[in-house]
Amino acid sequence: MPNVLAIQGLTYKRNQKLILKNIDLTLETGKIVGLLGENGAGKTTLMRLITGSAQGSGDIMVSDATTATARKAHVSFSEQLHGFNKNVKISRVVDFYQTVYSDFDLNRYHELADFLQLNGELKLLALSKGMREKLIIALTLARQTDLYLLDEPFGGIDSMSRKKIISSIIQWKPDNATMLISDHYVTEIAPILDEIVVVKDQTIAVHQKTDTIRSESGMDIEDYYESLYAGGVDHD
Ligand SMILES: Nc1ncnc2c1ncn2[C@@H]1O[C@H](COP(=O)(O)OP(=O)(O)OP(=O)(O)O)[C@@H](O)[C@H]1O
Image (cartoon, rainbow, N blue to C red; front, side):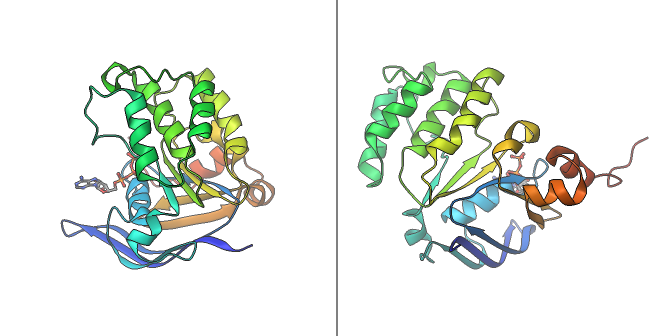
């Protein structure tokens, strides 16, 4: 299997504080990969480094693109829409995406929007947290690209919709694309994951196939994940 992502020797500091160190990570094409780690572990930072929104030292290659500018064409990242005026309608945001991203597929967006029950006439300020997250998912997946980065996409979405979305992710992902999803609801997302990557102690502590974890440890993914932290916290 060819690689869609290859990271070598990536280190990132912010205000002299070491956030990530010596990250080596390769992801094959066609996989769904869970990015796990505690609050503040560096998951969002790692995604921002991959897209080129943050600059570290080391090498990052997405498909055959190495520079930050070239990588952007191959990565669809779940942007938080902070740059948009709150008075704009969803339909205007969609127009913007269509203008900026040549790989944005409008039909696909409308299919996703129907599935997620998004009304294009609503203004951003009228969206609940969950509706806003659904919009971000639709915009991110409507691009036809090699690598999708979904950063905690389901946090505010009600559990019924969340289950529906998670089970549909496989059908929305182009066959040759890879999707990296960070999420704290490990049990819910585990059934669709081919692999997990755990960020711990500023680096990648685990990168393993979920089937291998289940067969070798005899644990489900959430128990295995929690076992990585067992004994690491002092309880009074
Ligand atoms: N704007 C910022 N200014 C300074 N430090 C920051 C900023 N954003 C993040 N950090 C620091 O970078 C580190 C990694 O944060 P990051 O947001 O990548 O973690 P995360 O794993 O995505 O966490 P969460 O699960 O809470 O979203 C943390 O130590 C955090 O304090």
